[in-house]
Image (cartoon, rainbow, N blue to C red; front, side):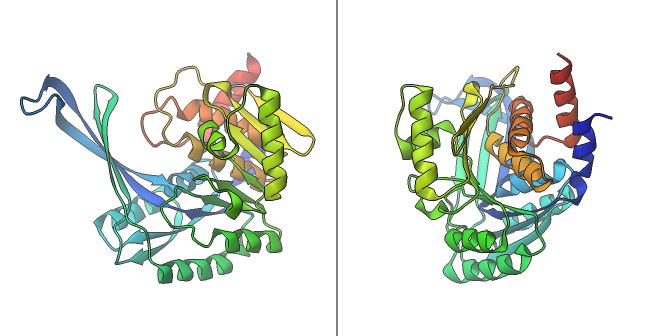
Length: 320
């Protein structure tokens, strides 16, 4: 048994709290053989459908797939989609605290797939009410004391209105808190341990760059302004780069074939958080997260990476 394998086997004791915007991802798969006579669009004859947890729910599922314990705190509508999401999460082994808001519809992303290509995505969403978010914040405070690490997954759907308070509570309790950010204003993430924007999200906040040196300067400026320990920028085919005070670390992309990048950010932060919660050094946690990202982009749709897949890929890479 390798040192990494031995360490990964210990992840079963890690307790991660995931908070954020959840959604139900629905997939309709079918055959495309003709164009509609009504409009210049393909006609899809649907043959099967699938449902998967998305957003923060996919992060939570990813944590459990890696062998750790996860509690998910979020808000859904009081509807069929919310109930189905709860069922799928419980089947995956995720402990859930889904506050039901009768005034909103659970976020649903419906994707139509033909010939292994996404043809159309339809979104259904509304933002939760103030009262249900306050009750969520109260439960966050009670759950925090039993957790090793917190992941805040922001998809901009309104479920993290009180994120500043959550980050402050994590800091006061000495709990690492990782944030997958969204939008063009990162001030609300001030004080987090780490944020994990992708290349496009980082550019939206920090502006464009012409070289890795300029990128590093922008990352350090943002890191200091937000009082973060680190920023991890995922850079698609360029891999991922970690920026800490006085240090830049890079991992090249691992994917042999990119099939679908949806949910890749969820896999990165789930793996990173689980590894850090288990006490892995940040560079090793980043390396494993990069390895997991290389696996998940080879899968169709919102997917997760299991501990066995991660071990196998890591072993094969080290042998070569």
